[in-house]
Image (cartoon, rainbow, N blue to C red; front, top):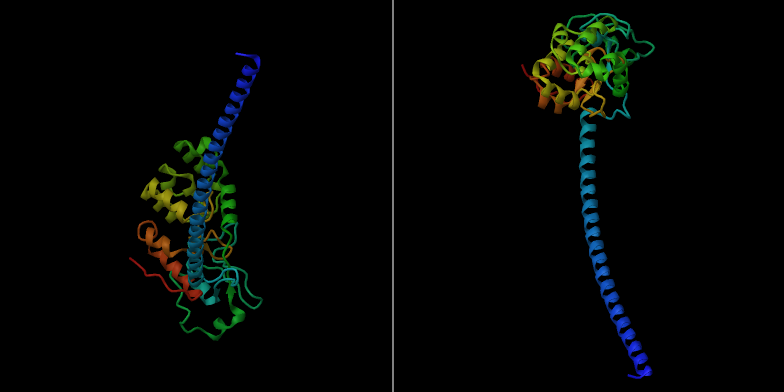
Length: 298
């Protein structure tokens, strides 16, 4: 074969190689574009479904928000229930004075209202429709209460109980009980440990509930039930975001009469963890703001 023929053959082979390479490149590019288009269609479909899901979720939340406003009233626009001194006298109180605000203090009073520490008989005040004296229905005698900030309560409790929240203490039941006993003299009466607390291993968050009867009941129902109740209802102790299932009315958060649990909590925990007195307290606060009363149980 001549030299010129050999050169022409090389050129022809090179051209054929280039054509094949270009063909393969075009094919691969086409396949790649097809995959990208399919992925984009799938992404668009997913985004559309996600947008629709979020729209429906937003609609449900808006409906739930309206229902809560209808039940509890708008805390943003309304300071809360107004209570007369007569009703304050009838509000039950389970303890006497301590370093914190005195028992029965339910918020700032107007200039003409008399501040009345609660030391009266236990039981519920009469409904607001019950006739009262003209002085008790005078707006100048009303005491206005507002919900207390749950996170502030939690912060105060965690400061009080810091020694038992240390990892070496909280992880050892016997050390926990011994530390709790040593802490007892520094605690206000509603938080002083009961004999059951000092003798039965339990979660440290139970110690931070300012209600001796509720603490005992949570220990009695066992760890699984008590842990669920704490995270669902009693976020004043748990270091988690507030679930909105508990309102503390007024500044005296150590007085458990000022607590109001939601209807959802009573449906799940009523008559098991929460006795009849808790639903009576809830109805007291619901009555003040004109909300429907919850059914009672024995």
